[in-house]
Amino acid sequence: MNGLIKALIIGGMFTFSAHGFAQSVLLNFDYIAQANAAANLTPGASVSSLGGQSAGWLKVTDLADLNLGDGKTGVRIQAQLQNLSQFGNYGSNTLELNFLGTGISSGGKDWVDTVESYRNISGNYTLNGGDEGGIEWAEHGSVGNGTAGTATSHKWAFFQQQFNVQLGSWTDGETITFDFVNGSTLSDGPNKGQAYNGFSVASLLSSPVANQDGVQPSAYAWLRLQPIAGNSGIPSDTSAWYRPFMNATNGRLNFLATSVTAVPEAETYSMLLAGLGLIGGIVRRRKSA
Image 1 (cartoon, helix red, strand yellow):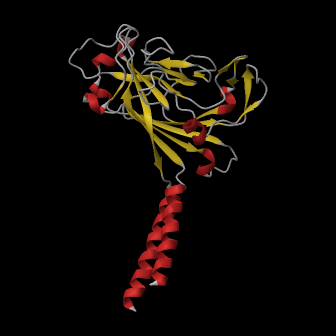
Image 2 (cartoon, rainbow, N blue to C red):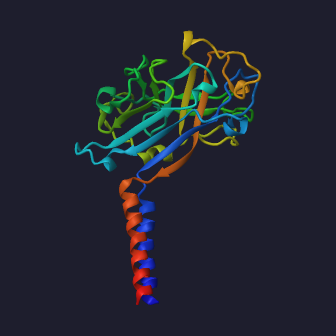
Image 3 (cartoon, rainbow, N blue to C red):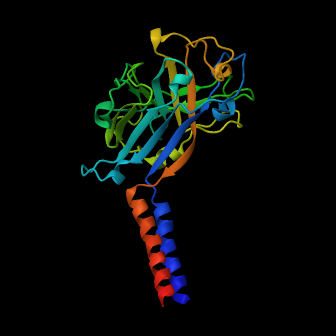
């Protein structure tokens, strides 16, 4: 019996270790933010509660865990748009995240050099305008409505990394992959000339953007959707589940990722299987004895 207990403990350690070494996180764009005029202060809501489907997902992995062999640290970001047919001919023009240390401070903006810190891995998307060649590191974007700091505010503020994509170049079902790499130089602001090393899964998870009403959930990423044809506004459709939560002024839907799921990597599963195999082998030997 003592041998079996020991085996269970060892196997459990393998299994626990496997769970603890998850190297990626998955964020699902399954929450929609209200973005109408301030007179309509409806808060955000989960997509499923409104009868809709998620607009896509985002996976973030530390580069050090990918064993690329180039000595770089930072994060790899994979993102996919999904279920856009529920809105019509829509696409994304902006993806926003919030890593620590690139925001607006009392002394001005800290900009990260895009050439050094960004690299495209896969996907046919095109960066579109914006500061720093399509990525605004200190964009300070706010989604929602109401007056900041008041009881009626339903704002999420502030997101920093605004990844601007040419509308129509990132389409439904397509996965794009890019890296944010540490070590680049801050090119403006009070810390100009210093290296930025804040891109990591831990950094992203430590700085969710809180909703200012204190009721809605915090968000880790923000996805904007707009009609592709003519860059027009949202069609008026009072029967659509997303109708009360659309921005009729500049024609976009705002989706947030408000929850995080750990994603075990291949070696994690190997450790899990090794632990279970060890337990099974000991149990079989005990039975045969």
